[in-house]
Image (tube, rainbow, N blue to C red):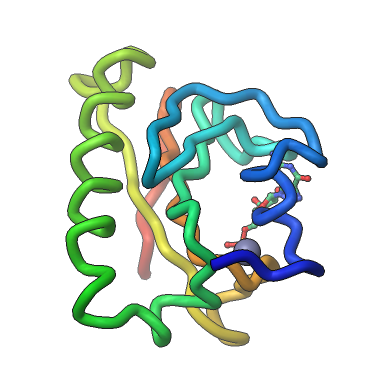
Length: 116
Ligand code: 5GP
Ligand code: ZN
């Protein structure tokens, strides 16, 4: 459930501080330390999962829950009408830097086209 050398497990445990915006028994959401947009929140399962590739059938409810909380936070943070992006990076080509599954909620500015 916890990986000793994992940055986000340490954030879940509270041994590394974070600016939390949502927490329950399953998930945590906190402000990104290097925001790429005016709103930049990370949503993570408290359970350690390396990446999207390691998500199992039993993990799917928590993924759905993350999506539900992202929708709620987009409203609370005032970007639901202006628009936002929910991103998961998986693996080297995506630039995934932290090997604990997380979703970026980005908004508050025009984010540009994702492709092309
Ligand atoms: P990735 O590139 O793995 O999808 O995204 C990792 C994200 O974690 C980056 O946006 C980075 O700024 C953020 N991050 C890295 N270290 C910390 C930290 O100690 N605290 C917080 N709040 N965010 C972090
Ligand atoms: Zn972890």
